[in-house]
Length: 187
Image 1 (cartoon, rainbow, N blue to C red):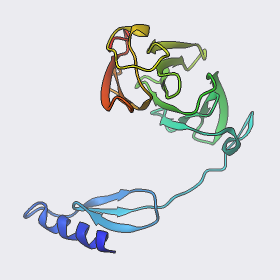
Image 2: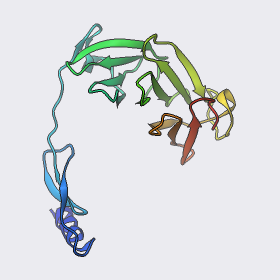
Image 3: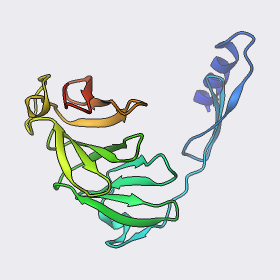
């Protein structure tokens, strides 16, 4: 409650003369003003069935929007597409790993996967499932370079520029945000 009270105080004093912001949905089923925005949340678990059985049993590790009402889900060994209707299909096999983080290209042609364990960024073609390493040598390090000359140390969190030309990767153990050019794999 003290946190909500402090947030409420900051919301009133943060911007003199500014009106309270619009409601922002977040997980948790609570309501508290944070920096001028009223936060309201509701968590809903989706029951999804796919060709490999219930999605929950597959060890989900990452999720990304496909920019068209559906999403991609990375599991411990697969990249899946989940339609807006909840239909699950496998796009590609992923190497066995502890965690994958994903982002889809704005044109929906590819999904980029940050592989935490293998220290690599991969590109998966949505139509064919073909996968190629875009950047990363497969060993941990902090070297800038092109393709497999570049090194990450547990890449996680991945975002893409609005034009799809660059990836931004949180390089966890190096404490850096790395920029990877999609066309060349240059970092």
